[in-house]
Length: 52
Image 1 (cartoon, helix red, strand yellow):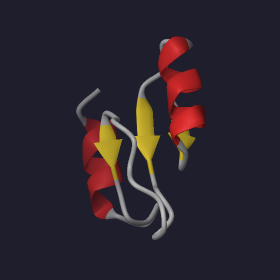
Image 2 (image 1 turned 45 degrees about the vertical axis):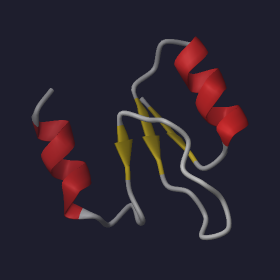
Image 3 (image 1 turned 60 degrees about the vertical axis):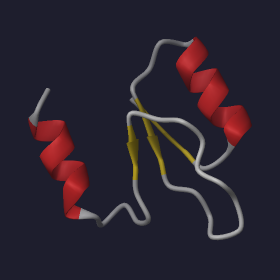
Image 4 (image 1 turned 120 degrees about the horizontal axis):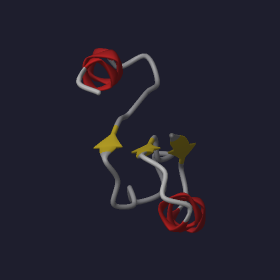
């Protein structure tokens, strides 16, 4: 599992075969990911992890 905020990091995580969660900064566009959040405190993160 990887947490990323940039397109470059997201591509590296995908290339490594990792599940990807993005938390982009307000000034960047969210890269494609398994889950996109606005904060790591988002309850959706725990809900998503519980589905594994």
